[in-house]
Length: 317
Image (tube, rainbow, N blue to C red; front, side, top):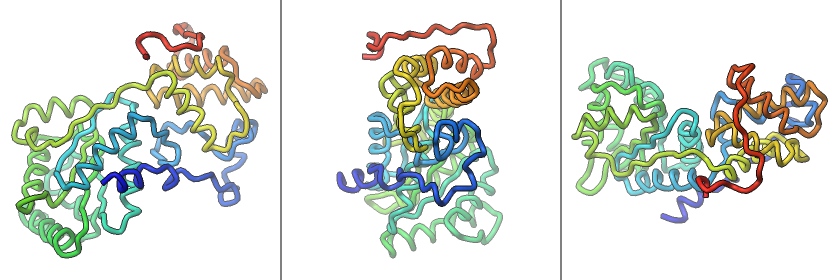
């Protein structure tokens, strides 16, 4: 158990040095990329490239809990978190790393607002099957045959990762509950991990028969200042930074402005690089970060409070 989790958590599986020679066409597209001698933009706020996911201790713990449910074939886990806390990033990490193993079949969904029949069609397509019907019951039977073939005959594990799960309708929550009924006497045949905002928690709470199926439920909290700074440095290093682009004070300012939300840290980081390059600022200063944070917020007048001391406050300890 421990070996499998450690293997899947190991950063070398996806976080490898950027191959500049394979992506020469991208160089020069962004002025700040060349100015700071980077290989690529470090603070993309769209997409979930697993190479850029900084595995904080919290992330490692959440991934480990989800992997335990998958490995032990316990059926259902749920990861909750506010917007921008990294749910999709964790989902991407799990998808990428489980997919490297021959004994796992992994499917990914991000639309639980579809009709039940379309949801079943999407699931089957993810596992490489053509639906035999548009009727839910027929599609469920086809899926059950797949489960038996893969888990009981081939010895594989089937995993269903569902992002943006707060969009779920009550009908699709019921459908997922029915899929979890496919089991042997000791294990579930499909392992489902739901990633969603707090709205998902309220929807699930209104359906006790679904809630009772959840084996593990974890929440992503905001990052502390130290982890936020580590995230910024990690993303810069993955993009090829060869020196400290942000001063220590600028890093503290950026971390404080982001309020522990990874997505916000990326937004402010991106604006900081744009401003710094336009000012020919090889080492970004706190003043640049302050202005960048205003741009990220869409504000020209608000002056957010920023702490420039280097020691964490009591709330972060």
